[in-house]
Image (cartoon, rainbow, N blue to C red; front, side, top):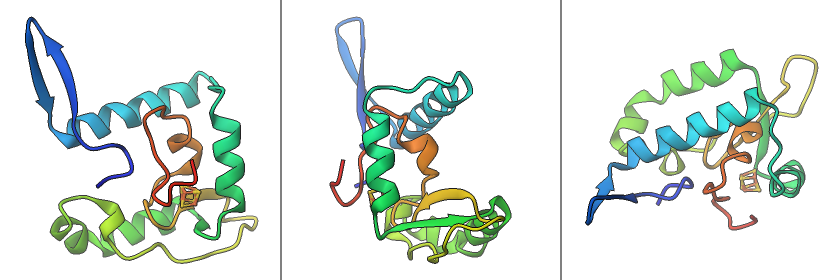
Length: 127
Ligand code: SF4
């Protein structure tokens, strides 16, 4: 199951329709980016960020390293049905002057965005 919750339903005049997982995840990511752009800090985010910062599965990468990793694992990602949790973990790097963006090695999410998404879940159940 994806960290972002899988299928979600919407109510359309007396009918429940299951949204495809990709649509739901896409909407959640857009919502996360919107909150980041508007500098909205939901009450649940500081605790999530703290737990991620302390977690052994956090890694720091540049945007280029992350994009290169995604491209290099394109076949595996396709085989996994675009469920990034099923793909090999991101490499473990420490934060430095270049590697400043915090990612989860397991779900591969950018944690500053993921922690803003209300329905998002830690793949290890830490939050
Ligand atoms: S989402 Fe969970 S597993 Fe990933 S870095 Fe944060 S606390 Fe760790």
